[in-house]
Image 1 (cartoon, one colour):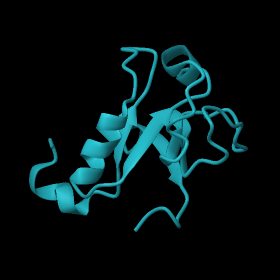
Image 2 (cartoon, rainbow, N blue to C red):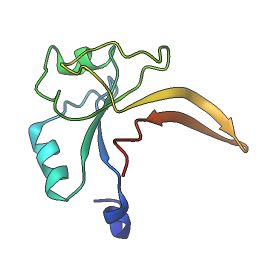
Image 3 (spheres, one colour):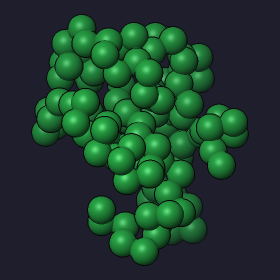
Image 4 (cartoon, one colour):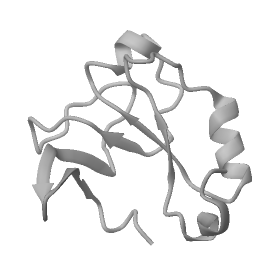
Length: 110
């Protein structure tokens, strides 16, 4: 894992499912992250998930970090009925550095 000595401090490890590069999530990815003692999470969006994963709902038991910045209200997809995090703003300038802002459910974070 690329996090080296910080692995024990990770809150989660996200499997990034986006149209570019279009790599599909696999159960082996979820199992490998879990085997390292880290919680897996899917990072995707309602427009990207079906383009990459089709109608696959097999990962609905993996927590979702949703990319939908347009709505604070979740619109279900991929079998998920809720999300634990969402991207609230892209390209926000914070102290001169451009970052993406995200919001997470406090019950999900340790």
